[in-house]
Length: 186
Image 1: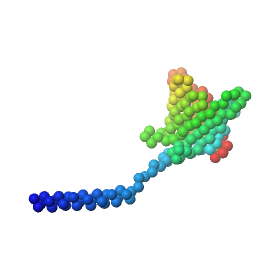
Image 2: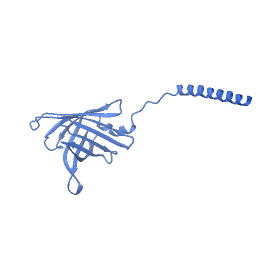
Image 3: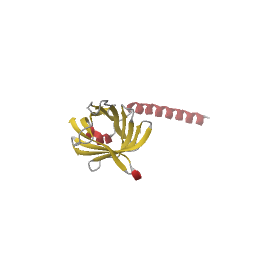
């Protein structure tokens, strides 16, 4: 019986010391705050204020909009806001808001856009390659969904051309709309 009590006391003492030491260690270790993913650097090019026109230059513009992109939501996203300007050909300008980021699970850039005419689209991309960033996803428009592809071609540090594609014959992409954007402010 004495042996049982000695073992019990030793076990209780050891447990108490471990619990106290573990409590001290746990207090010294602060939980790490999440950090924005380094992959967001791939989207840094877009930060700033851009003047964009559709169709792409040098064609005369049917639509002109200003696109502002900046880091937001604790620097985990790039937040873009586009405001179309009124022109003789466009009496009802629309606006949009978008979020550009990185999904660590899929290892892809992600982009979600909501447009003031009820449309929206969600796309993903991998990375820039040879001055081109290719987004692919779905546009939701008037109760339907359609595959969408956008190729962004970096012409210079302050200009890019974007071409939107929709499915054509034999499931090949056909160009639908193009635009040119010129940076007017960093």
